[in-house]
Amino acid sequence: MAKVGTFVIDPKAGGYCRITLDSGQKIMVNHAQGGFKGGPLTIEEVKWMGLGAGEMLLQCDLDSPHGKDVLLRLTRDATPGTADATPLGAFVNYVKGCKSIAEVRAKCSALG
Image (cartoon, rainbow, N blue to C red; front, side, top):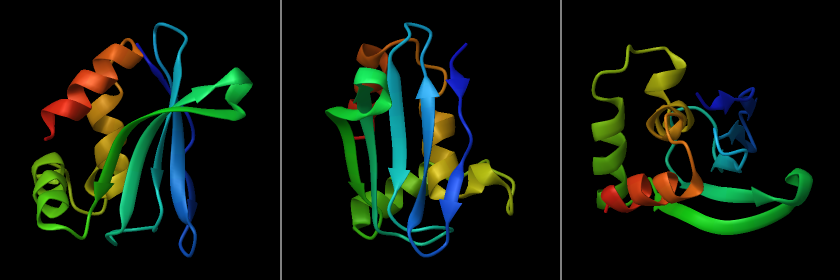
């Protein structure tokens, strides 16, 4: 099972969460704005001891019609007021079961 790191949140600057997959590969889910706000959300591979950015696996503008639709689908069953009901929590929850970067890439592609 993947190891989900701590959610680091700054209401003004946004938040992120690092996930170590079963394969040992690492990804970072980053939401540029905190809380329930829109804005850009990315999922990217983390390289070289967590210092270098790798492949961008997902870029989602949560203010766009497509981004709003994706977020609505991912938070549909989330309990209001929980981390899973936030954009960052919803996307972390979506990819945390992946075992490798290839699986994350496939799940991100499935979002459209």
